[in-house]
Image (cartoon, rainbow, N blue to C red):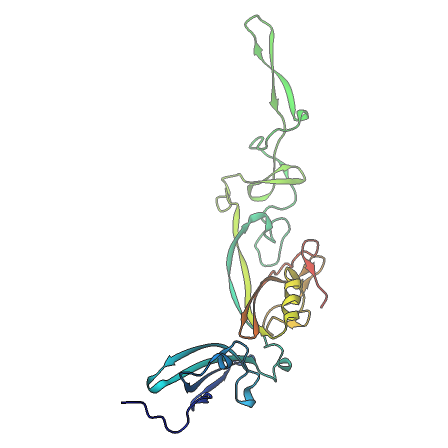
Length: 300
């Protein structure tokens, strides 16, 4: 039996009831919308990435991806996912950053401990101190300078002549808790060498607190992406990098006098999402600051 067509021929797609719009609370708006169309309809005009949503209220939403179901009676069901930025969010240019934090412990060299040389608040006593005396355990450093050797009589040769040799005279130096150094004013740290301090003997690392932030924001502006990439590996004393407020109100901020700012933009990743740019970033927090001699410290 031949197909008898009546009613709307669906030569233009018809939006179906039940389409949805959602806002993530930070300004990103998405919609899933279904259309019915005749199977001969060229869906490209409806589904091409960047095509505006047909409802004028949501024309700021642009097509991101789609799927097609080829139904009975020559009808196609087209499902289109749209994405855009709420016009009330930063004039519709970018969403507000959504940031979370991870806090834990990480292994660091013991010499970087804030209580290693000078006493820091909260600790029972300093670890190594700054005063070093000649080690009673003998030399513990490699002899590199000829001035650090001395000739001594090692006995008599078979022909009765004196036998001379050279032995090292350079000493290592010990501070508190068996902390051993190569010179009297510190120098290279050799290690904790005295077993009468078992809690530190042989230790080279300690567990330091580590706070990392990860966040995501969306922007319609290529210049936003380029600006953030230029700010990578820079530290700030506030919650913002340039015009971008990347840290939430509850995040610790500030600077350490004579050292540097406490928060470093450590990673910026970008991918296209519909007609937008999805920007994923990471920030590393250092209570003792990021040294301005090593890292760019930007003005507030």
